[in-house]
Image (cartoon, rainbow, N blue to C red; front, side, top):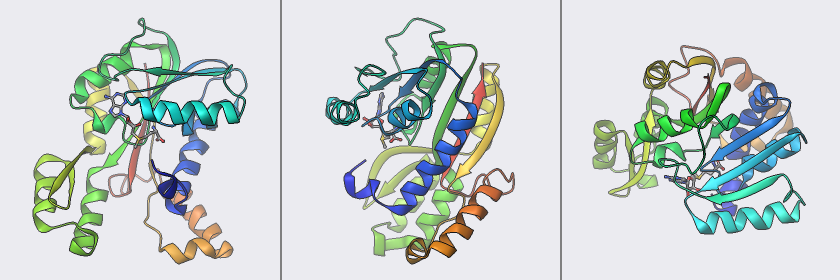
Length: 247
Ligand SMILES: C[S@@+](CC[C@H](N)C(=O)[O-])C[C@H]1O[C@@H](n2cnc3c(N)ncnc32)[C@H](O)[C@@H]1O
């Protein structure tokens, strides 16, 4: 994610909501894998939530990991967060190593073979450990693309390609990022005998950008987001579907 995107208040709200659930579901101690962790945004948040957790931030991109290393050193967290180059579809870890495996912010969606990627995430998780997946919600993104249209370089052809392939298209090109429905994630969990212990969508509503600057409105908006992000009628219509599975 670029610096510009990271400062976007909508993205900040997304980070904040995911962190809210990490605080509830992370173990009290143990090993965490941040698969496709990029520049380490969530690894760093996890390290700051609980000092008894050791984290491996792995990513396929050397550039992302270089930036992660700089951030980790700036925050003096190098004893607790290790960076490792790897592909989610072929993780270089033994079976049953991690207490909590997270794959957030579309890293999973960029994997060409998501079945293989999911099997790998499950394989490296300890029995009773958790797998936290966050992916683009198919319908939420469809509604958003339909409303945006060509003013944001979403052409009708892009919308139809997205509808047919589930891969987000923009400006006549595929972004390579696949989206999912809650039902698909349920099915993936069932195929691996996992139970779903929590599902939520974050953010659940889009927010008019200027309301982020009004503290009172923002406070109300956040309350509404938390109140409705687990609502089963809305889960498919927000931005990022989050499932926490237990092995
Ligand atoms: C949008 S970034 C999200 C980073 C981080 N998880 C977050 O939420 O801030 C997606 C990341 O997935 C990584 N990625 C894509 N395909 C991957 C793969 N097959 N294996 C490992 N990482 C991958 C990219 O390099 C990128 O850093």
